[in-house]
Length: 78
Image (cartoon, rainbow, N blue to C red; front, side):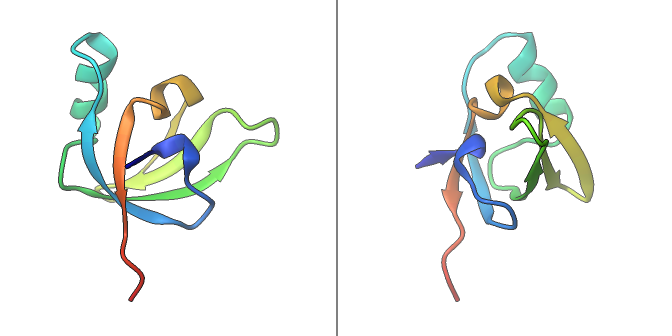
């Protein structure tokens, strides 16, 4: 299992879980970061933070600390 901040640009995965039970975890779920949803890492800003990803048809930028809370199952190569 990996986290969102460890993906390479263009790489796809499936959300497994969001770590934590605080307001940030709740906000991530409200934005569409829910288990079972596919996600694609798009790119990182020039200094590596924030990170841009696509989930449920939306493009969202997250700080690395938030991305580290999104646990993923990498998409299988087909």
